[in-house]
Image 1: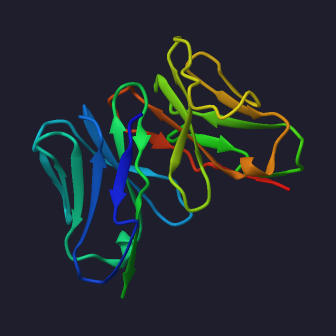
Image 2 (image 1 turned 180 degrees about the vertical axis):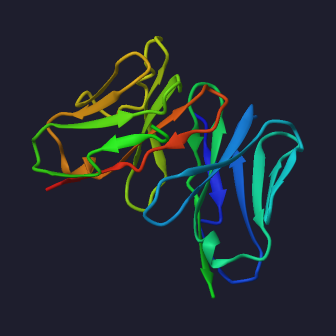
Image 3 (image 1 turned 90 degrees about the vertical axis):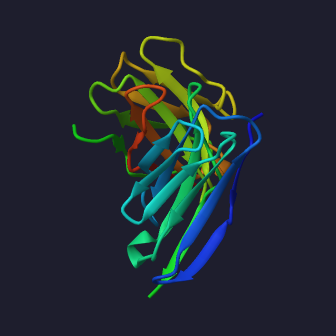
Amino acid sequence: GQQVMQIPQYQHVQEGEDFTTYCNSSTTLSNIQWYKQRPGGHPVFLIQLVKSGEVKKQKRLTFQFGEAKKNSSLHITATQTTDVGTYFCALGPTDKLIFGTGTRLQVFP
Amino acid sequence: GAGVSQSPSNKVTEKGKDVELRCDPISGHTALYWYRQRLGQGLEFLIYFQGNSAPDKSGLPSDRFSAERTGESVSTLTIQRTQQEDSAVYLCASSLGVAAGYTFGSGTRLTVV
């Protein structure tokens, strides 16, 4: 079946440093979505990528879909304490999303 | 309502008892999903409803788990004869369709003692 690896599993950064999480699939994807889950909260939809090589930005967050549509990355520039949480990629669409294992980000002030 | 509503927010039950979890999706969202999240883990797909189509039950871990949805509204997830390994947060999500982002509820934290 489809396997979704996210690396790293954990990342601790000093506030102001950059952060990147990577999502890799064993199969070619139709699209990929990214979610953020704050500690004690529920996942919140961030963005969807559809096209090969697509790059989308949301303020300090940059999302990229690989040319072969088998991988994706989320990059945060100049992290803030509000960025703390777990970031999940989710593979689709077929009929339901398969979530990656997540990357837990901790930001120290 | 404005968001996905789940109830109860917390449930403690004795091993062997049945529990019923409820999800009210966003009005107009045709797709509804149930996921399970164990402590510190990722999201495990359980079941998916799309309109009036037959549900995709491929993620249900055993026959003790079942779910129903009335039309395009409320869904209930039932766990019979609960076991300690059923302890987790059960998350419900709804969306406009297969290619749309999901809106999750706050979840039901189930503890089996």
